[in-house]
Image (tube, rainbow, N blue to C red; front, side, top):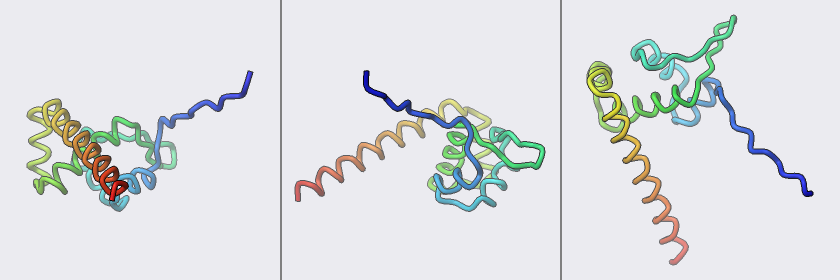
Length: 112
């Protein structure tokens, strides 16, 4: 029976990894952490932050509202507090559509 390598999935990500994923500085992530209650990374005794996938999803949502929708911090905080599920669902739909768009653009470029 051939050896099959298991797909190892990480549960925690460092602030540097998260910053790279989002294309922002680590300081911005720390700033958002102070301003949004939905960001709750785990910290070890030294204070090193470890982010879960849920934290990353919340950071992506904040990024969308603040950077892409150009909302203020206060406006984004209120929007999330009012109806986080609706905002999150809308964001997931936008992410899916952007992914499909990117895939179609790649297919188009291959056909040229």
